[in-house]
Image (cartoon, rainbow, N blue to C red; front, side, top):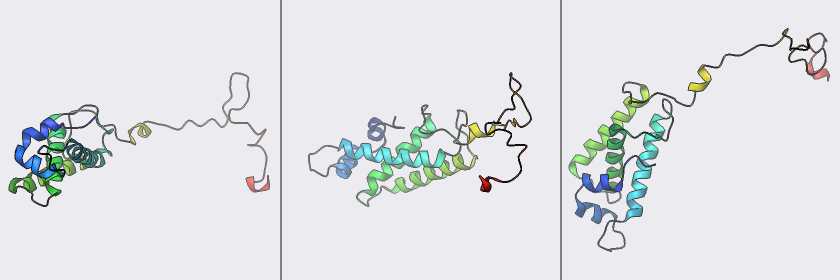
Length: 156
């Protein structure tokens, strides 16, 4: 799921600019494929910045993420022609500053942090040496009396 929509882009920049910057075929209309790609690239940048603290891609899109996606996608569209509008560099820079703040934990999104390592934090090892199962057999004793034999694995 994209973090912003074509409608968000249309509502955030002049229509004539959008057409001029995306109409490579001179059809007189904005190219949906180019807009979609700009949004996908923006969303990839967001995912890259947020993946250490949050599960991405996001399934909940709050206004902060939507606005960051819009600002980066519009920057991507303007960058195709090397003619960014005067305020676009400022908005793009602010979006990246916000992403950095999210990444390092200075800004929290309104949903739970569940980055890639969060599940492993709660795992505690369970040692079975010396424990027995319901039949009285040693747990982990799959190779015979390995804990009573001398030597090393190199000798096997």
